[in-house]
Length: 201
Ligand code: GAR
Image (cartoon, rainbow, N blue to C red; front, side, top):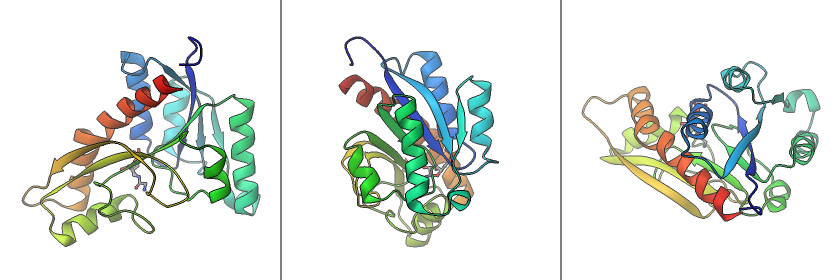
């Protein structure tokens, strides 16, 4: 750890923010103790994740790609917030935007993503949110799960930090499966991975 100091964490979100909530709860319960969530950045002004940040007294920021007009301007604004807040670790928790190679190269092994499948299955371009679970059910796999990995220039292609398997059950719909994968895997391994990476900084 940074000479006894906690690693400063920014969480990037786009939607409901249940993974953000899992991180906030883990910080409160001591599962995360080597890092501290200092900023939540959303690309959507109406993301419920921002409400969760507010309730936890974490500064929230909205950075809209549409409003800024280009990927470059969007990423420059995010970088500005990260720099101003001295952020060490960036967690993508349901952040539905692809970051450029320029951006990911600026933070090697400092950006963490949670993905709702066992990578390398059902990952990469087009595999996000419910689509991942639709694809798993359509293929007919009997086991799926979640993966937390470092982010590099290849979508969902960075080094794996933690994975957890989840059984598929008779009668599963994408929505039912998504909820089980979150409860049994994502909300457990994401906080653990964030603590592991915070310790290593
Ligand atoms: C989660 O299932 C997360 O793994 C997934 O989106 C959901 C966000 O939920 N992320 C991806 O698919 C990224 N490729 P949340 O906003 O409630 O955390």
